[in-house]
Length: 267
Image 1 (cartoon, rainbow, N blue to C red):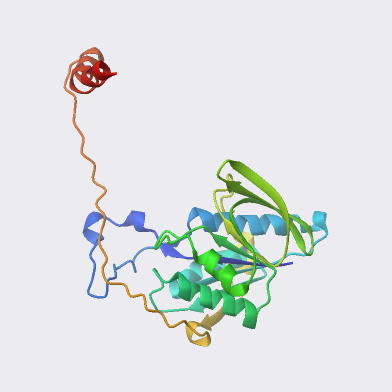
Image 2 (cartoon, rainbow, N blue to C red; image 1 turned 90 degrees about the vertical axis):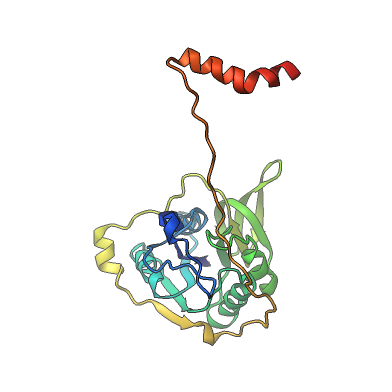
């Protein structure tokens, strides 16, 4: 079974201080000094693929897992880590374009890769990225491929070469269903699926394997009418009030007088 894990290597924006949030004339923020990271959904997708590969001897189904990202050279560090984790192949589609808010273009590239470069049985995509957060790329990829898409996936089991049992979150709980490949699986909240850390030995033996590099010029992009017109920094400042008092009892009384008394009297 061929599994392709698609992920995004995004800068760790939590490391930016307030003075770093400077938007230039191209509506960009300089993040070149930040280390690229994976969000929790992509980490879960990668770890699930590795666990399915680990269980391949038990299930008697051969798992050929690949990882792919559309990014510039900083993503190479993560790809080397995936090599060390013994992914069968890692692919970087080199891009200097701004795809932050272009899920349609990303869907075009991913679907063309599957159809023209490497046939796959299952695509894993994280629910959303830390930049853009559109949460619809997986749906657009499935639409272009003509494959079914299951969202909010929290568990996957391999039955045979052509079937999976997928557990996913729904409004009133969970649903567990047997599905036939090919399909697109959108990985949601999955407990205890932090991406494992490769050993030093595996880094030495596998981390330096070649990375397949393609270019966005190898793919046909859609004629898009969307254009990024503005970018603003959202203020997350919160106001607070210190309650004065020498003892916890005094502070509790003051809190009651200031905030709770009037509300409780209305009840």
